[in-house]
Image (cartoon, rainbow, N blue to C red; front, side, top):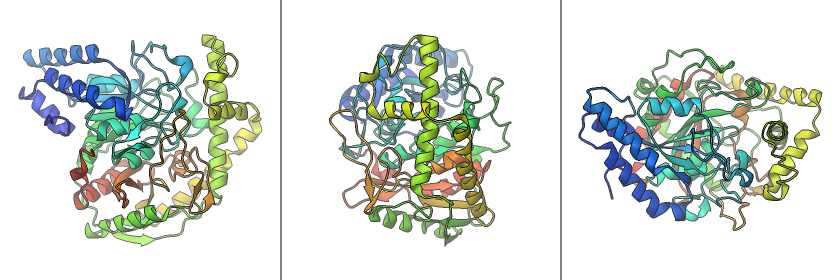
Length: 488
């Protein structure tokens, strides 16, 4: 096995800048590994081998001229085939009607990553329009967790999580509208962080204000180490003049935050956010994992959290808001591209996507705005916790990775701990924090008896991304998981 597959981004970029490592050789090594393993894993949807080799050659030229290519010099990355569009590259959104769609622009985060010297290897799999917490679609099929190829990687950034864990990229990009960074990180044994809402800009068009009125969609990293995620945040974060809702510059040094002591932290732990049913296997592993913070000098206390609403109401609110967004998306595609999703292409769409669009079309403007009262209640409930504590810890998802379906329709469990849950996302303790905008990470907490990964969610107050990174890095030092790579 090449030494580069599991080399950290910081170490790899440093070696490239010192001209001890050839970025072209690195790209060739990764492309060979993708060719060997991706058919089974289903992580990538599109490989851009020629573009990657050209980019690596340009980095070598830059170095030969005595210039610095950037902090990610020669680091191979993968982009989610939904939010991470790259000009001239197929951008399918996991949807059959867009199987031949070519992106005509770079996403803002993609431009920043490439400007920092990263080399794009390709696009990674996602459920159709990212509508659920598993990665599977009719166009490409499922993405598996590298720990069990019969089970799903989680979603909706499942291709990115599987790729980084299986050594098919050093860093991967994802997007998170309900847990889509954190869910696959938990299912694949990776680290992911959803930063404070709009810490990383997004040039949403035609409606640049859609995120303010809906639920927060966030770009973010999925990595094997906390330090690599901090490095990606340093590159991706910061305001953009065309994002009317992004945050101003932060004074946080993300990489420095990973070395910070946690001895002064007061940590709150809830096994269920007060309302979510959680599988006993997950409960036991996370309950044990949270005690590691005490070994780092932090104080950990079990707390009751009152979100004011049941998990069913919270999930239904999320589904309705997503439905309105999808309905607007469908109308925009019809007007601007002549694509009638639920007309000409209805039979090609995932049934749940059709249902979401139809639900969204039936929601009145006043009903849509009134749903944000649920979001407000969640904000107040979480802020109540942070009036006494610095960090809130929960399970990331309530159930271990599920088995892949054979028809492109893999969904999560419909029941957890003998209680019904919505199979799209109701088994995930992640979407409440897309309503509130708080920074939240998922970190590998351990494994079930049958070697399936379990994730632990670490949440911080708004704008305190550095505290989430500090707690994550401390846990990584106390309970390192890197010995589990490669997973097969």
